[in-house]
Amino acid sequence: MGAPMVGEERLEAVRVREKLPNALIKVKTFRDETFLCVRRESIRDVISLLKDDPDLDYSYFSECVGADYSTWTHERDLEGRFEVIYNLMSLKHYSRIFVKVAVDDGQTIPTLRDIFLGAEYPEREIADLYGVVFEGNTDHPGRFLLPDDWIGFPLRKEYPLGGEDVNFARGDRGPAVEDVSMPHAGESFEGKTGSEDVSGR
Image 1 (cartoon, rainbow, N blue to C red):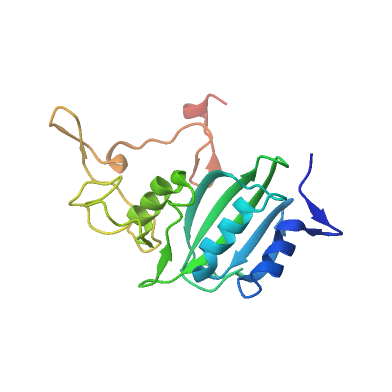
Image 2: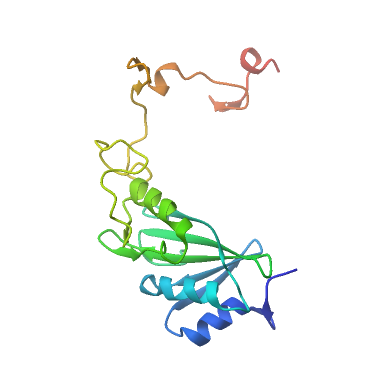
């Protein structure tokens, strides 16, 4: 069973355009997947429509993920430093749709956790790692994945790469990754992939 279509266009895009004419910015198809790029303030209405419309039935929330495009130099689907991409599945058609919104520093995105309970933890993960705030999902003190004293948001592009000593469960500290890193078979170093003494080739 395939995705619902109206002629050459996905039914999801047609319904969003009909019911929420100001919500949809663009529709993108990439590698046989469809992305609905919508306005940030319309995300709840769009997701509710996709979920509740009996002809669509996108009642399975797979995930939502974040992306930082602050150093991206190529064409973009949306304006805004960050994108949040929601991955929904229709249990009626066994089809998938992606919904994208953009957000800048200082802006918030309405939470979806009262529409999909499964959205709570992915939203908190994005908030913890990117600093994107989901309005209505901020009632938990402290960090989510990271220690409460962690400074910054490690998936932002300006966050420094490099290691730090690791705290182990017994209280001792281990070396940073770069202190013990070694080339391995298949790793590119000195312009070569693999080597005689590492990979045996």
